Amino acid sequence: MSQPSNRVFSGVQPTGNLHLGNYLGAIKRFVSLQESHECIYCVVDLHAITVAQDPQELATNTREVASAFIAAGVNPKEHIIFNQSQVSGHAELAWIFNCVARMGWLNRMTQFKEKAGKNRENASVGLFSYPTLMASDILLYRATHVPVGDDQKQHLELTRDISAKFNNDFGEQIRNLQHGDAYFPMTEPLIEGPATRIMSLRDGSKKMSKSDPSDLSRINLTDDADTIAKKIRKAKSDSDALPETMEDLKTRAEANNLIGIYAALAETTKEDVLKEFGGKEFSVLKPALADLAVEKLSPINNEMKRLLDAPGDVDAILRDGSDRARVIAEETIKEVKDIIGFIS
Ligand code: TRP
Image (cartoon, rainbow, N blue to C red):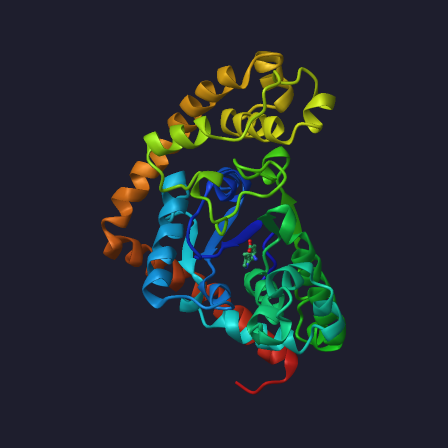
């Protein structure tokens, strides 16, 4: 197989409560990349079970992520939307990468340390080796670009380390089998700019998170218009007027967050938003932001509802996407087996 020159791969975990941070930091980007790249978007259910999941909820959440991709504007016919567990190559290549990656590399992963917390002895082995599965997602399709949030940068670096070590360890065989000097690419991350870090609406110093106990801290993609407006009205603010300069904005976490959300939704810069709202009260910004958020998110919310009412249709889209992903994956697995010396 020849190396594609512009293939995008990305994944989102089906762990519930897709929110504005996921939309602005990832899904919105997925939509625009369709113009320039061949895109493969995956609901990473194998990653989800690194921590315990309720089976019914896992299925519902998987459909919810797929629906969000489609509702936001990913075209599942021209590109691929599928769920990871339907393509066995992900798990197969992950095993091989478990034997390429070093303990020392994985021991440095900050996400594992955060997720495992103090109770590391009781974390699943899967949670520890999570990044090798992520590398396999990407390299199974020999993706050249991966749009991800800031927090996934380290996993992308690990993916490149695995790619380089594999290419090096099996260099002779790779050349003998006419794959050139390198079999796997050095995948580039595409890290989103100002919109990557959407913070909690209740605390501008914490990331917006699906696991925050306060539902008021985030805007879920399943929230209806009234709920969106209410959450923005109740967003934390202070009694000072909004800052007028970018310098001052940096010292005001809550203002910075709301101005950032406004800019991302309006597809403009924070500087431009400050030109309009700098020096004004939060009470002026909030209704304008609520209107904008409803205008941009309601159509997505409505389309998601429509899709989730027809789960059979969503499942059919996932099945079709999986069938097409599998064709690419099987080719990679076959070639990797030849390179390693597995008889097939
Ligand atoms: N780890 C990613 C996250 O939590 C999800 C993910 C899994 C992913 N596999 C991937 C992202 C491959 C990009 C490419 O956000």
